Length: 450
Image (cartoon, rainbow, N blue to C red; front, side):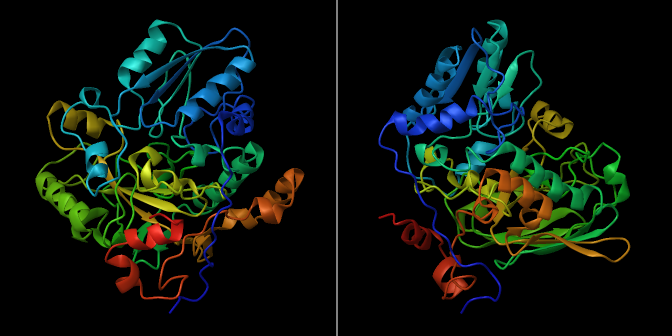
């Protein structure tokens, strides 16, 4: 049985990579692309690099050496002096159910145990001390303000580097982000949002007018590649998300049995299912229940703040998604129309700083929505869909299609390269029997993994 209207699965065309030379067209594109000061796929570029610039390229042991070599070579081709650092992150292995907890959750200053995918403090200090012109470093998370240029390095695998997502036209991608953001920021303020997904998500909240006064992460410039569908802390007393977030994938953890997180007045009140991932989340929910964090209206850590919308239609799930070196499902969240829901504290905000100083647990955990619908009912009663059944509606905007036509066939350029197949949603089968109890066998089968 399949649900009506959901798009059929689409397997990406994977580019053959037999040598570093096969990666060079992508690396050369990056050294001409705009510098957005971002680490989001499609918004990373090193285009301000000029002859004589000193560049520090810092990766870790789980990066594919060919990706590092290709990037450094392309920078040297434009005249830069490139030093590389490899930080020890241990040996590669298959992801387990608790990796997201290990990567994200902390009870001490993060400088004592940096989150695996953000910038390493001593690397950033080295770049400042030695007056590098550009630091290339970090898979995700915010980039701090620095005296030097600082851009991300989000490709740990040759299979994610050698894709159309890496070289997606920046002009088109920027317009997609602005069109999606316009529905929320300009037309949606004061409206009511409903988010649904066939894996069980169904919750609502209000885009209160107060959220648009500059204190809650909403501004006229979208967070490109990570369009925020919900404000960030500090929260007003009226934060009111209510309903359920549900799914079977997150950023850095092995896909897990179906999890259901219940929300009331903006706060997670109950976590059901999820296997070992859910067990760990329940323990953290209980541990933090009596703690009042700065920026939150009531005690407890796990508040809904992140509804981050991917905007690049060419992103796809890498074949090695079950291994640490792939970054897990963190990469696939950049695909247009995918929402990753984050519940907890915001990276580096005053609440996290307070928790770190007081040795209280902090961080946030994720659930990914692969076929979401994000609908706004405005104050006047107009209904607008930012995403419909996993399709980002900005991709079909006439202006976006006109600009895309400068780079080729807009139908092809704006088509998602990857659509997962999930039994009972867009593939014949029973969601609860064939997928929800343990998604890994199905994902292995779909990706052709033994």
